[in-house]
Amino acid sequence: MSSLHLNSYGLAPFQAPTTKNLRPSRHAISSGPTKLKISAISTAPESSTSEAKEPEEPPCVHLAFVHSVLLPDGTPDVHFRNAPGAQKLRDIMLDTNIELYGPYSRALLNCGGGGTCATCMVEVIEGKELLSPRTDNEKEKLKKKPKNWRLACQTTVGDPDSRGLVVIQQLPEWKAHEWNYEKLLPSEMLSEIQSD
Image 1 (tube, rainbow, N blue to C red):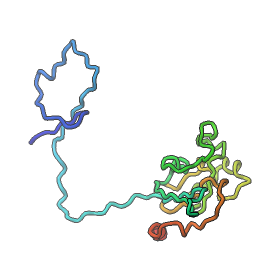
Image 2 (image 1 turned 90 degrees about the vertical axis):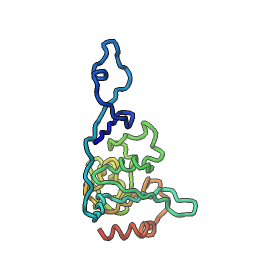
Image 3 (image 1 turned 120 degrees about the vertical axis):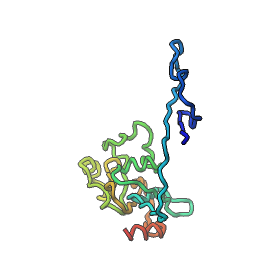
Image 4 (image 1 turned 180 degrees about the horizontal axis):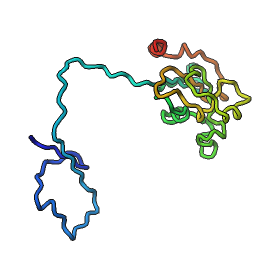
């Protein structure tokens, strides 16, 4: 049986240990990268069953983000994303490159997720039941706004095992158009959501 050795540079040929490479020199001080060796003793046996089970898709929340500006052809600019639950809406939007702050995206113009500036307002069109209840910060900052407006930094999307659809209008204070979200979603996404 042969051995396979891995080091920090990739695969390395097997070299039997000798007294020469086990004894360090007193005068040599290594300042370069150290090689880490890992030996593979055996491989995992192949499964004898011919039935391949299809892996179950992990639970995730489907999100549709509608931009506040229309495309040149007059249709809304919609971006679809999937994310696991139990995350802040702000983090999902920033991690997936969805515009959140608009004109307030520069440093010192927003609070960075502290819930004190209200520049991360979004409008929840569909899926309010998947979101956390409004926090006291949100109630204070959004008391003159519609009930379906939320602060993305204070809103948690679902639980780790949540599934469903959330439709978000970005920058609702800058929105200059109306739209119907059912006409915008792909039919396969709607059928998948309705079957859950």
